[in-house]
Image 1 (cartoon, helix red, strand yellow):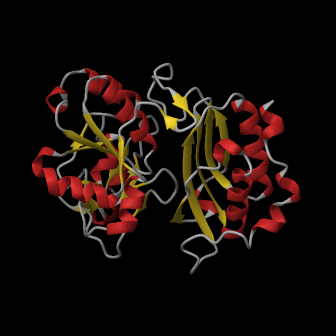
Image 2 (cartoon, helix red, strand yellow):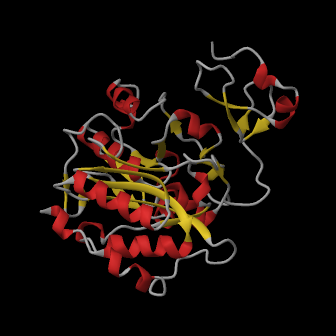
Length: 318
């Protein structure tokens, strides 16, 4: 039974804080960690119950998705508690290989703790296509470190195409220079987009998929390869790892959108935004929810237009 394989973390939590020291230890004692791993899980429900109990005991908030393909999580809290959480996960064999990305933030960036069992940990709508073994996704794109990405671009120049694996609105405030941004509002839309034929001209050229932390590229690169794209790569560690290595001095432009109360992350201070205000030609990286109750569209609005109270105007998405 999977439940018996889950570690007895209750007796060990207090012993783990001194065993592992994360990056970014200066400043606030609260952080956010992002992680995922694709591994076969025979009892996702048991895993989800364990994860909820573990997070509640450590006063962590965030969002965790579990499926038969693996786990995907973003949680925030005290550094010591996050350290204990990581050590508890390492007690469970399928999760030993998880690489955790540390980010600035805090528990309160999440309204609550959500732990859900889903058919997919990334909702592309192709659960039956996804194959996972003890090494991860079967048939995915070749991993590229940030440094290897630069070498690929240096060697192939304009032949390399960046393919954004995020929802279209995320790319409005930050993206790799010259990247293709598909017409997507959810990850389900990607399969329709690559099946449409509009990107078939890329099937024999190097394509680098990228996303926030790397998880969406795992699925998208596999789906592209199975549809005849021959030279598919994925940016290992995603935009987060690339930003740590090169900030905005490399091929990345603008800010990174994140799905919590922070909404945006900048890799360098005093960064000039590249997003365009929906009401004028001003630049901004700040999203606001539409003021209309029936409309849930996130809208880029600059400070000047906020001062003009445009958010109370009639919905521009009608």
